[in-house]
Image (cartoon, rainbow, N blue to C red; front, side, top):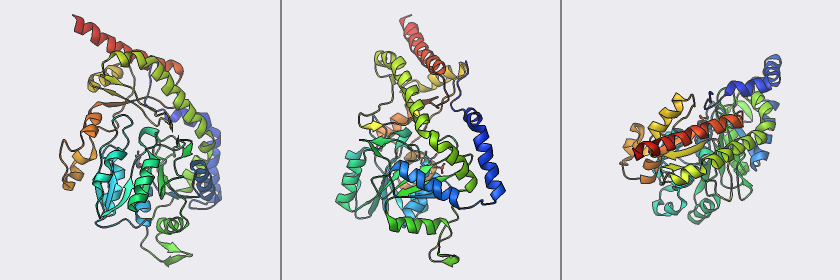
Length: 381
Ligand SMILES: Cc1ncc(COP(=O)(O)O)c(C=O)c1O
């Protein structure tokens, strides 16, 4: 049996008629940029995520850059973030001329460890930029408390967590801004790039709308600030509008798959003496499983074993950002963030997409069990 890590075509065939019609409609009307399609989508996504405003932009990376810019983060400011994330989180901070200041992650959720943040705050700290990794929100209430105690901005990188909640509260209710990505493998995915900034701050929303359109205000050739060319393409908005009503069901299907994995792997994980660790969904979280990420001390061997059995897996992420060449000028060294370093050596994401059948999830689980038992058997000889 073949189990791909993602299956973008399966989802397309499920929706082919609606998607094809929506794309054709954009071409027919000739409204390729802005317009009601983009505005309606912004409104609906903002509603879903608990924000007053949604500002569509060209990518999740731009969403971070524009959010930092609109909130006044710039040269020589410090932004506290996590080294265990996709590169865009740090890249956005660096692009603004600000300094990423890393805090290690929590060993169970892999999100920023809120207990380590305060010791890293200095006079230059202007913002916190946590990531809701793999589809599980970071500890918002602790982050909000720290941000308000020290007068910091809170920007949530929610690229991987659309639809998730914590204590029943959606991703964009708390903080100054939350950002989304619609990259083609995300839970809500475009057929190309796209992103959105969500905010409850009227002033920031107005600045963001200006920033994404070359810094214009009112008239299209009246520039009030140095802006960006970062529109959410109307074609992508049309695709996303077809998919949005299905997101809740897709997230539920991801959760169902995760629960099947948990059920089938719990014993073998327990018996492994810590060699195999399953993902933790905290009781307050509604995890949307953008990734179902296990840890394994012999990750390379397990990945090869699964590959031989036609099971696709991926490593998100193989090295923490403080050890990447682009960010060595920040002056961090190996050993500075031991949890991120250890986790990066052990994580392995399994297929979790909503189109998987229970049979496929069972097959992947059985192969992992087989890997564990073959190891036990060989160590007995
Ligand atoms: C945590 C995180 N932040 C930011 C981004 C950037 O989004 P995009 O690829 O849409 O620019 C991604 C997307 O991969 C992500 O996973």
